[in-house]
Image (cartoon, rainbow, N blue to C red; front, side, top):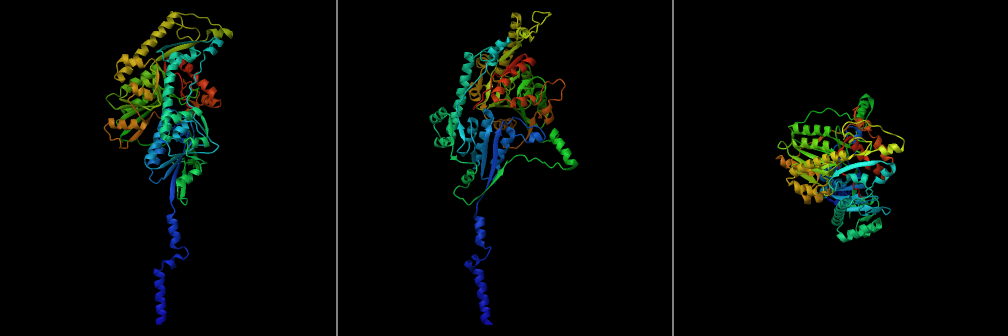
Length: 606
């Protein structure tokens, strides 16, 4: 009995104290320790692609699937704040964006990196815009079959005078300001010296920005970057040798980069990180009703919030009188004075709105509509802080509506200025005669034909039209000088229709600061006496057009909008042809508005 007891005690002691014995048991602690030691890494996957429109998306199903600049930046901001994330993969796929949106996305990426999270860029191929976004990331991966195209800058402006001469069409275009070149494509066959001087200065500044951005992001000298641009097109292997990318490989190679030296780590990649989830359960009668509401853009009724807010008013598209439209024949969004004035008054009269930020992305348009919106924004003076944030373009009429702000923020690559006026008409009389149409006229008043689309200006009609343009130009420059607290003579020398980048405009005093929309909102809070770190509700105005109106045009019998028909037509054409047709859109404007404050061209970087 004693021997048995002793053996039993010894066995129990051995089982309780011997780690060697315990390690050999099935499902033992060593296996568990190995499992615990395996590192788990959480990675967000975000795709950068498309045009990223300003403002909020349309309500309903169609709006939910289209990403705006705001929603893209929100996803990057969420990644910056998400402590559970170890890294971010950005799949950059041919974004069709302008210079301001490019800068906004780069700043968003830099905020993620500032929080200690690595950002990896994956590109199948890239042009200049895509690469400049990638250059803000920690590492860039390109497949061996991919191409990196950095050909430099090129501005091509098409001129229609010879075409009009062949058709016997007579453009009757007048302007104020030697740089106001909106009329030139229709009245000349090549650039005037002033127009060329203006374009040279803009391209010089854009080129500088490209060189400095790549130089800083890739730790290359400016001379190295210029040499790279001059050789233009690069294979992935060449790009790596030149220091433009870090890895020649496919997207799955990024997983190894994230693991680093610990190849046993588990990597969990969340595709579509931060993207709004769409409820697609349409079963039953309730589901069908929900689907119809989503298709039509009907949103659930919510109680009006009494919390303090910042109003962000999106001023996007060509400026026209009347209501805004989501799409015109030429596939362009328009900004209507009636719609904008309603939004401005809503922000002004809402006691919960503490400050107003106007985000401008417009080449201008109607001089009258621009002035009406300017006047309404002036009514904010002394009531609420009024701050402007300039997007890709805030020129001519787009500058007009901004010039009364308490402070103007521009992006470095914003196209702005173009303080000038253009007006006129197209005379078709000789063209009509060529195709067999004749016109008889009965008139009273020697200037009765000034608006006629048939005959050219007479001398008195031309004089009357030019006088009106001169008067409007004087109003424009006087109001701009007042808004910028500058002598009229000094401002007028910088006006004359000349266009500037945001960086150039800052040096000239036409804007106050270089910064993003987020910077403008922070300044608006501070101006309202609110701590910039305080989170306020954001009231986005004007409310977006419903999908029904986007498809079929405004519910307005007087409207001539063709909905998405024109946009769909342009998308079916080669980009070069579509671009030429968009260039003719000034005629659509002139048919409705005889005096324009409009940017004459677009600058695209490829």
